[in-house]
Each structure stands twice: as C-alpha cells, then as structure tokens.
Image 1 (cartoon, each protein chain N blue to C red):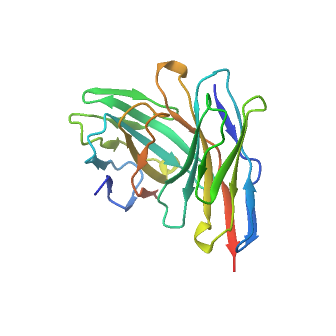
Image 2: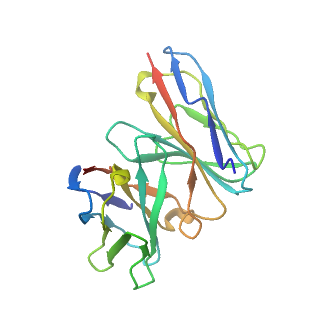
Length: 116
Length: 114
C-alpha cells in the first residue's frame, strides 16, 4: 500500500522568507502523481501544485515549486517570498493506479505559520 | 461557478441518530469521493464513485453508506451515529481518474456526535 509521510508537524517563517516543506512517500508503482494541497483556517482544500512522476522537470506555480526526487521518493514544496496568506495546513498527497482505481492518499499535514 | 457544494456546514448529532450529508457538483464530473478528516490528520477516503450507479469502498467505510443515482449528487449516510464518527467530512469530484484530473473539494461538513 502507498504511504505518505510528512515528518514536520509544524513550521513558522517570517514574511518574505523562503520555506521548504518535506514529504516522502512509498510505492512500488512507476507512474503516479503527487500533489500539495493547502488548507487555510477556512477549511477549504486548495490544490497548490502537482507533479507527474514520469516528468523529470520539477513543477512550478508562481511562488510555489517542488523538488521531486523520484529515486529517493521525496517530494518537497518550496514557498518563495512567503506571504501572510500562506498560513495554512499543507498536505502532501499521492495518486497511483494500485487496485485499478486512482485514489488520493494524504499525509498527516504540516501547519505553516507566516509571521509579519 | 458553484463547484462542489456540501450541506450542512455544521451538525450536532446524538449517539444512535442517523443523518445524510449532501454533496452536489455542477461540473459534470464522473468521479466523486467522500473523505473524513480527524483532528491533526490528513484526509482518509470513505467511499468513492466512478459514475452514476457505481460506488466502492475506500479506506474507512464502516458505519457509512452512499448512493449515486445521478451524476451530480453523492450523499453520504450515517445510520447509527457513534462518537468515533465525529470528524470533518469532505466531498470531492474529478472529471477523470485522480492524477490526471485533480480533485475539487467542497468546503466540508463539521459533524459532532455527542
């Protein structure tokens, strides 16, 4: 079974700084997708960025980028120029093909606080 | 653009009561999902559906039932509410299978069983 591990339960950073959130996963599959979701205090789940495993190029969305290391099964999220609105829970998630149907497996999440 | 709509947003139930959490999407998505999120944890899949009339169990299905009579609606039913079912429930939908078509989430339903 696939597992997703987020070992840092909480981090804080000053506004405008850069922060990296770590995520590791375990799978025997070769083709899969990885995601970072953001959950602000409003509780809404918002897709931040996604990465396709067969693509070597790291995904980038504005201030958000990933460092995808397939061999190491590592998928970290870098947030540049942190803003107060980035304060949220961040969840790493995996989607593969095991069992004939693709379903999301989430990590436990990490609470990020951006301080003024 | 309504997206995925969940009702109610909050609910308190007594042990043994039953209720249905409603979920509707207006994006013509084939796939729909129900998750629960316990405090300090990520989301866990309860049930999912790949189309009208087709449902299947996820990781934590016990104590829940679902139906999918239309493409738009995917209600989740609790028959005999138990304190262990106190959680935040999220409904999601996607056009295709998970990776290539990201899931869109509703705002969640906070359910307390007392």
